[in-house]
Image (tube, rainbow, N blue to C red; front, side, top):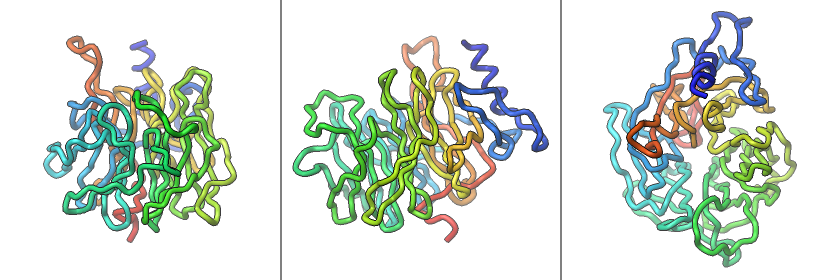
Length: 341
């Protein structure tokens, strides 16, 4: 297994000098076709911090810092200028996905499990936190997981239940749409267990990871058409990881509309890069199983930050979770701070 993983890492990072250069080997049923257009030949993953219980939900702040969740119950802040990681908010209500809205407020999916608030929260620039939404038709959410925000401040969030013993009040796991005034609607129920989610820059499509952790469940990358009322209509299957494979957790976009998705485990764990129609573009192996990713801003605009498990050690039964980064070829896309404005 170690030899297989080493070969995958070497092949995934080996970028040819011309368009006809050899591509990485097939990863599961994923066949990279544009590795050299995504990953520089000398790109290497760098571990920045490795003291988490389960890192998730990285997001770029206006000052260039990267905020990310440690689902142990805190939000952390990494400063690229100093390479220091500090606590931003604790407790976090078991925050998972994080995004900034167009006004610069931090919006968080707070999950279930002991200590989880099962809500969408907003933290303003002064550090004040409030509940935006925690119920649909009087029933508490399952466990808000990940979110995407459009230019008008409307929030799409996924509401599966992976962990936590709290009684469920909803009989489905769907995607919700929350408006800035806190009103909640179902965006779609046409998923099994939604996880990562992103909105295209033209706001016409929402990508959703349908990641059922049962071996025979969906492990799909989906594209939904946004309808006039903001809900999600026509569904298209862009990629199927197949049974027996870990599907997508978190996702982000670059300025060309390509999708960077954290998926897979063990030898197949890494960043899977797809084109807008599901084209298999590139694979970036990660040292441990990945959970989410986001691009930086400013001088770090082409740097992909990744939350994932840290290297296994002989001293620990399970690895600590980490924050990594790798420099790529294309800048990332952000609603806030706005890209290209």
